[in-house]
Amino acid sequence: MEMDHIYGNVCADNTESYRASQATLKATTKVQIPLLIIGAILLLGVAVLGTLTYKYASKLSDEQKKFALMDAQYKNISAVLNNTDAQYKDLLATYNISSGKLSDEQKKFALMDAQYKDISAVLNNTDAKYKDLLATYNICSAKCSCRACPEGWKHHRETCYLFSSSKRNWEGSRDHCITLGGHLVIVNDQEEQHFLAAQAKDVHHWIGLNDLAVEGQWRWVDNKSLSETGVVFWFKRSNLNQADEPDNWKQEDPSGENCASISLHNGDWQDNSCKTNNLFVCETLASS
Image (cartoon, rainbow, N blue to C red):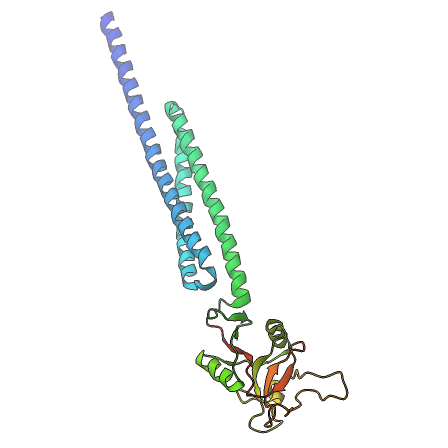
């Protein structure tokens, strides 16, 4: 009977040890598998967001639709991360409860925990870069409303300007601007005049102003008079013996000077013979 009692105790101890080992194995497996899934999701999220960030950065100024798509995908990835983070915390709590039973897996868990934190740091850094790009995009939107100009044209205040590299007479310049989808430039205010003068760099450029119809009645190519636009920048001579512009000088062309250009004198206007070949400035609205 005494031997039977000892044998019974031994069997009971082995059974309890086996059950404890099985419970530990199951708990370990439950923790490892979700954490491996979390790591895979986070790595996939970082790769996707990194690709989107690269594409967005290379086409920021003229890719508004792609930006909207990227923004939506970013929010989706953020939602996945938040959900994954909540699952991670639940698993961490489960691990802490079971830590007394999982002592053999502590090193593996510590490694996975470090990897999770590394991935989170990378994602947070990517998130910061995304926000920087978003801020840059918003600055661009505020300044230029994401409008674009044809190649070779200069953008200024919602308008595109082409400063020609070839010379034509006034009518040829007017017609060429029309073929390009614009017109000879019309000056509407002091700020635009400063911009044109700076870009012309003291070289004659035709502008869209003439008095071909009626001498002395200057009109723009859209048929508005100078009194309607309200701005006048004719060159004024300091020599009292010489007339200010427009002076309709007829020494070179008996028909007079009936077309206006930006002059060599700080970009102020002067009249010239319409037959003269000059550089010219076209303008058109920037496209959205």
